[in-house]
Each structure stands twice: as structure tokens, then as C-alpha cells.
Length: 601
Image (cartoon, rainbow, N blue to C red; front, side, top):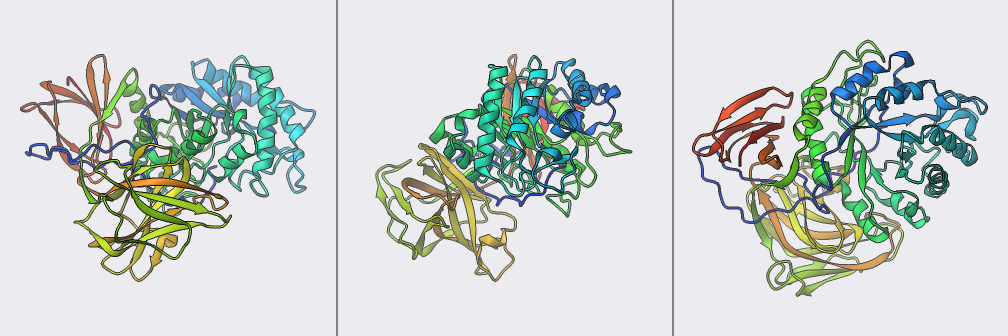
């Protein structure tokens, strides 16, 4: 079951890149500039690899019919699954080893050519100090380290010829999964011991840190500072942003903070071993703002955005609905063995894998309207607000033009440190912008850049652009629509959302991790507002043919340039049709459901 977890603030790096594509009957406007992919991202690091949290060994109750769900996994076209190898099932008592369910599940999956990421953990009741634990049942209390190492040794030894990728625990930074409270030192010690054992059994094995919340790097930093960075090979993240959509939740920004740490401690591949949306009320959204149709669209959009952001492998959560938690591709139906009731998300993932098989990523083709509201050719008119934690001065280290704002900071306490610079005369922001952003030259830290905006009702609201990230110029940006969290309402008096017209009141640098102590310097340039229609166009190719994957959450009509006379259109569910080009244009109505267009460029 997905644990409930406080939704992260809608932090910056608007994964949605806003465009003004060729509107009906109009000539394409010239873009002011091309917005880079959400930072830090170097684009896809390999071919698309979209997997699934399958849970056959732990949730399917009949080992004799494991081929039933495994056949559906194969139909989805996934080549990787994430399987829990729960300790309580395999070793219900210290002297008993029972491989019935794990053997059956792995045999069914591996025989179909599906790779397995094995998750080791959590505890079993007999191996924890918590007296109320049922001895032969699952427990989330910290285990006896020696007993856990013995369990790992047994599992890896048995499956070493078949599984070469292991994830150590699930969400050790989550109080629901490491009780009585997350303990970074204890987890790191366990990780280091387990890594030694696994590598002694299988020197070619790849080890993943237990999937972490990427929007708060505190725990991961603690692992590094405790000496655990070299004990794992792959960074595993769980970038849940629901109830926000993948775009409004800035899903593509999920790697920003962990990449900043990797810059300090050593680069590693990033896998998202869980990401998902429920299709109704669930642990993260009691209202149930996403239905089955929205979930199906989010499957495609979220996996594509994470892949484009440089996440090497993504695992959808999950295969089948749990009672009260409908994250699955298959409805709960009559119980654990009922896989007959597929949701639209099932067809959506199958179609995605079919269409992207053998395709190569080329680019994002988005255009947009971007207007610079301050180029930082001067820093006159900016004043520090009350805190002694930094300074702002003019610097020649500019992204464009002759100058940029050099922001130096010194955070000296292990409580919340920040530095804010306010405009003596707030800067009016034109129109009704969809997003605000700035070019930032980072210093390798995870400190957050924020802005304060005042609206027509007099509310002062805070928006987080995101972690300043690694050295080099990159564009941080955040959406401005929707209701902000109560903690980001600085001066109340309205509806917790922007009412236009609005103005820029201040820029702020805040320590994302309160325990951070240190100093540094970043540079800011070309603070801008972004306007236009929200349309997404991801361009791939296969054997000389172009594949455009397009969607528009609010809906739009676009004209797509092509040299072909017609194109093959594939809907989210796999339905295929042919559309004819007119004067070198493919006219397409877009909505939240992504569609695929195959044509000659």
C-alpha cells in the first residue's frame, strides 16, 4: 500500500514548457528564445525504459497460477519489474526458509524475458525489538542488523544467477517505513553492510539506495555524510507529486536536488522506482481529483517527462489496485486474483511501450512567449530585508548582456536560514503570465531560489523556482496557477492564489535543509515571465520517420509542419487512424490525452 506522505510544495522548474504552436490558420510566431529542459537535465541518457511495480511475490495469493498476472505484464511491453522479496514471507521464523511465492513469481516473470529489480526488506516481526510485532508478519521497525544481513545473504545467494539489481529497503526516509522514526545513521550502516555481502556473492550486481523522496535531500545528504555514498550504484527516487498533474507538479524537476548532491559526492544514474497517480480517493488525495481518464494520461506524460529529464529507468506504481488506494492499471475487482478489469491506464502504458520501441529521442520542439522583466544590468533598487545572511551586487558574469546579479550568502545556523532582497518599487509583471523564471548559475547546493509576488488583492505569495543546482547557467521556473500552500502565504487577505495584475516584490535564497551550514555565491540574470498556450511536443525518430508525441492539458488546436502527405495517428489507447496534410501542415486537436503522430519530416 502506498503510504500517505505530505505532498511536497509545488517547487519550481516548471516541467511544462510553454509554447505558442502554430494556432489554427496562423503562421508560426517566432520564439523569443528556446527554453531549456528543466534543470538539471542532459536529456534522456538512453532508450526509453518504462517498468512496473508488479508485486506478484507479495500480493498475488496463488503461486500455482502466477502465469496469469505475468502474462499481462508481458502484454504491457515492460522489460523491467520491481518485485518485493519480503522477509516475512521468505523467513517467517528464524529457522524456516520458504521460497514458494518468490520462486513462482520470479519463474513466471523471468521466463518471459522480464528483468527484475529485487527489493530487500522490510523487517519481519521476530527480528525487531518492538514487542507488539507479530513474529511472522511484516514490520516496519528497524531490524536486527545481523538477522537482516543473513536474510539478504540467503535471498541473493538463491537468485544470484537471475537477479543482478537490488534495492535496499523502501523509503527509509519515510516514518511509515522505518520506525519508530527515520534514522539515517542506522540505515547507512545497514546499507554498507548489505552492499559488502551482495558484492561478495555477485560482483556484477548493481545496488540501489532505497527509493527516497527527491524533493527533500536531507536524508540522502545524511547517507553521504555518514560514508554510504559508495555503497550504492544507482540513486532511486520516488517523485510523487499527486494530487498535482505531472506538469503543475514539476515532475521533471525531481532530479534537481539529488543531482546537486551527486555533483558534490559523485555522479550516479537515477532511477524512479516508484511514481504514480491514483484514479480516485487515496492516501495522498482524499478528494480523488484524478479519475481513470486522468490517470491514463498521467501514465504517459509522467514517464515521458522523467525520461526526458535524464531518469534512466522509471517504474509505474502500481500493477493492481489496493483497497482504498487505486494506483493500479487493473481494478481491484473481486479480489487479489482478479486481473480481468483493466483500466484505461493499462492500454496507455502498453501503447507507450509499443510506440517508443526502437525510437530515438531528438528534441523538444516547443515555442513560447518569454519576456524579460529585469535583466539585472543594474542592482539599484534592490535592498536586503532584515537578515544579515548575504549580499547582492552587480557582476560581469552574465548569461546575456553586460551584467548579472551576484548573490552571496552565508548560512550559519542549523535552523532556517534565508536571505531576501526586496524591490523598493515592485516590478509590475505584464499580462497574466503562466510562469515566472530566471537564469541561474548555481554553486552545487540544494538551496532554493524563491520569489515573492503581490497580487491585486494585496496578498503576498511565495513561489519556489527550485534548487540552484550545479554550476553553469540554467533556467529555473515555476507555474503561477492554482492555490499555494498555507506556508507560502506571507501576507494573507485573499484566496491563496494570484489575482491579476501582479508584481514582483522580492527574490529569496532559502536553505532547503535547515541543518545546512555554509556559504556560497550564485548569479541571477534575465528574470522573465512566460506566457502562451500550454502544448507539449516531444520529437523522436525511428528509421527515418518522425514521431511527435503531443498533448495539451487545457486543449488546443495546432498545425504541425510536415513533408508528408499524410500521417498515422495513434490514440492513447492504441486506436489508429490516418490524417491528411494540408499545405504541408497536419491540423490536430489536442487535449490531456497524449497522441502519437508518425510522419515523414
